[in-house]
Amino acid sequence: MNRPYLRIATEEAWASRELFDAYRKVLKDRSYEDAGFDSLWNFYLDNPSPRPTAVLARLTDLGERRLRDMDETGIDKQLLLLTGPGVQVFDAPLAVSLARSSNDELAEAVRNHPTRFAGLAAVAPQHPQEAAKELERGVRNLGLKGAVINSHTRGEYLDDAKFWPIFEAAESLNVPIYIHPQTPSPQMIAPFLERGLDGAIFGFGVETSLHMMRIMVAGVFDRFPKLQIVVGHMGEGLPFWMYRLDYMHNATVAANRYESMKKTQRKISDYLKENFYITTSGMAWAPAIMFTQSVIGVDRVLYAMDYPYQFVPEEVKVHDELPISDADKKKLFQTNAEKAFNL
Image 1 (tube, one colour):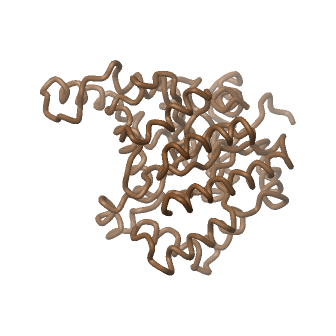
Image 2 (image 1 turned 90 degrees about the vertical axis):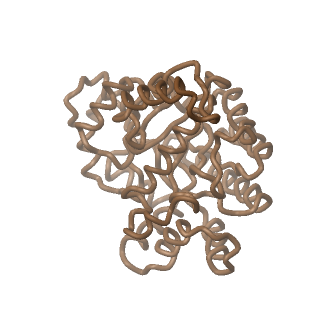
């Protein structure tokens, strides 16, 4: 290896065959009505075209094919996340069970390839107390490095205090929560579906940035000041809005316009810079990466490929060729991930 850093990719998806069987059952028996889930997973599970076929094959491979793809693109280590929406479309008992079995399978893959894989625990927010217990089991017993939550859970968001045992557990364990996108919630999806904008092209980012904002204005980080959340896709656009978010949040609070929006201890930009890590998944674009480093900080931006959904080997080179110092490239590719996820 001629480069002075490891390449650690921090938003790399996987899925169990058990999870896909459960998705197929939900789609067949209509036990959960969610047009976004239907749109996304009817495409990936049933469409015979090359893209969904290749993505499905790679999602369920935690061995030879994945390692070969990593070797061919120069990825030294993947941080594995159960693909969205994870277990969050099921009723609570099934979600809790699937989270547990998924984490056991993931932990086995990490044990088999400890220098190549690390993982985040899937949890079932449908049962917050069980989610907190599973996060603790995942970290303490299985060696996983935090949790992944795929944005809304059946239309509900983590700013609701009933979900805060999950935040409490993450802060206590000193591990992050990765908020990964899924399709917009049933309450908001209609105008996205009408123009095919419900997925990664736009709907994912809108959904997740809304979730981030709800968490910040609800005072989650005032209650859990050491909590760390990781988001992908260049912060789902929020770094580019920081000035306006600060201005309008302050103005809205001062006007006492909404009962649900109270003064927070810090500004929106402070939370983004102090409580979030941001990955470059799906955004291999030098101007965006460098801008985000400049406003969030070089210690807060991490490399990710978004494998296998955006498996574009040329995008690795974009990061390698950024006009930044080797020290900052090492932060981007390696040391920020090691710090964020206790690797």
